[in-house]
Amino acid sequence: MDRNNVLDLASKRSEALMSPCAACAVRDLSICGVLDPEQLEQLTAITGEVTVAPGQAVFYEADPAENLYVIKSGCARVYKLLADGRRMITGFLFTADLIGLAEKDTYSHTCEAVTKLTLCRFSRRPLQEFFDRYPVLERRMLDIATNELAAAQDQMVLLGRKTAQEKIASFLLLLLRRQQRHGNRANSLALPMTRSDIGDHLGLTTESVSRCFTQFRKRGVIALESAQHVEILDSAGLIALSGSGGDGLEPTAATFA
Amino acid sequence: MDRNNVLDLASKRSEALMSPCAACAVRDLSICGVLDPEQLEQLTAITGEVTVAPGQAVFYEADPAENLYVIKSGCARVYKLLADGRRMITGFLFTADLIGLAEKDTYSHTCEAVTKLTLCRFSRRPLQEFFDRYPVLERRMLDIATNELAAAQDQMVLLGRKTAQEKIASFLLLLLRRQQRHGNRANSLALPMTRSDIGDHLGLTTESVSRCFTQFRKRGVIALESAQHVEILDSAGLIALSGSGGDGLEPTAATFA
DNA sequence: CGGGACTTTGAGCAAATTCAACCATTGTGG
DNA sequence: CCACAATGGTTGAATTTGCTCAAAGTCCCG
Image 1 (cartoon, rainbow over the protein chains, first blue to last red):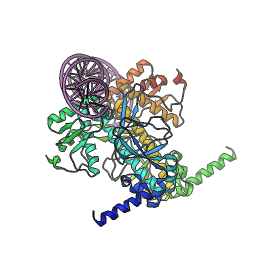
Image 2 (tube, chains in turn yellow, red, blue, brown; image 1 turned 45 degrees about the horizontal axis):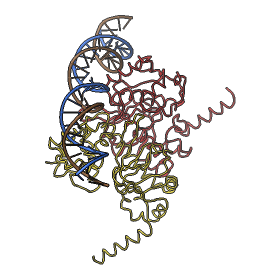
Image 3 (cartoon, chains in turn red, blue, brown, green; image 1 turned 180 degrees about the vertical axis):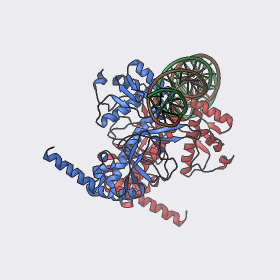
Image 4 (cartoon, chains in turn brown, cyan, orange, blue; image 1 turned 30 degrees about the horizontal axis):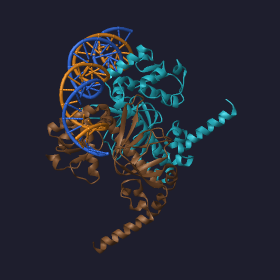
């Protein structure tokens, strides 16, 4: 280990001592990226790390909405239930995503860990005061809410007007795009959620999801190393199957296969 | 007319002279409600009234997103198209609603007038400067975006997990609730949009929408004075058909019928 | 190695769509 | 002022997509 690395480590360590937030891996990806070191210091006072085991709830629909969370690692599902138990997963959330953005006094969703979650918890009441003091934070929240809204509208198109195959293709491309945005150019995707989770997100049944995967595999568009691990073999083909443009998808070897 | 009324009128008139926004009927319902008279005065400089005839577009998907609009009166539909022409209407907008909230550089939707529209146009660039100066406006925008997001998530549940009947029932209840929120306790609803518009909003075909209305009529849940004019005869029954609670619906005679 | 959860596959079914015809309303030009 | 074209709405029959029900297969974890 050379001298520079030693210095880097030392500086990281002292940052961590003065403020855990300063050393946070997802800081720049989430809301905290817009704060300066002094503000971060203050923010530390109202945050705390939480871990949630797979299958456990972070909060339930109708609970008082006391916290806002940022995912440091893991995958969560956020859903609503109808009276007879039908479930709609309005979103899967991953590293750097915000949980509990559009809530009022009580949560309008249940949030559960799909994989083990490491979360950064913010108390909403003091966070609100923070917003009042630093409008830049509020701007950032508005940006995020706006992006969420645009994504929700795309999901409405998917749910209301796409076929089962188009839904699955769109879903896979969305995950692939997300992975690329986070700097991973690989064509293989982890699907930590179950087939029934995917169905409840796309307005399909478990069986229909499974059948679509099988069809795609037989056509050579994807390969299934395991049920939770898809390889995108022909992303151009997948885009063609998705019913809408593959906007924002980085060209890769497979895109031109 | 007594002396007080004369004074009221005079004051309204002078407000109108100094700033059209001060006399705006939808001001308190929309973003401008949070501004003081001086700020309103400044806002006037970047606004303008626009009218759009039924069927005409306010803007098209992919156009540069230059303006934000507030509906002063009328009904608009906002939609996205798939490559083959399938349409998804992500929302119908009415008096006091904001058009073009979640847009980036270009519009992600086409917006058309359903009935004659009277709009208040805001140039987005100067509006942005306004936001920088008055964080209270940004807060208001965040509130609105948050509400929109919650509504979008409810719509996802509807699209992904409700039956045709539940969709129609939910849609009618949503319109009824909206009307009540705006102070109209009547049980009759205007449906300015076509059956095909409704279908494209709920993920159904024209025919399915029509059949559902007929079924509801035969069951005595609604009456159709004309195709564009529904009377809610049994809102409790409609709630039961909607698959989810009738949250926020004011009790009326019909509710207990 | 055994058990439970998840996935896949198959066969039959049903809700909603497609296709087609007809009806109602409205607005226009002769 | 009326005929008629156009648009939108309703109804019916046939079809299809995706669902339900059922059974077997697979994987993971203790």
